[in-house]
Length: 51
Image (tube, rainbow, N blue to C red; front, side):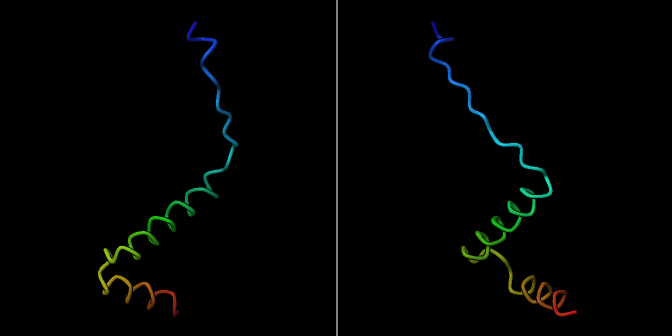
């Protein structure tokens, strides 16, 4: 009886090279929006991206 109720969910095959940066950027953006990242970290990221 439970077999007839169960539904299968098909997830698209997304490569790791796509979803891993997306998850990282989303998590970083969320932490940045919550003001949970120290300003020194932001400074070093800006310094790294400048060169």
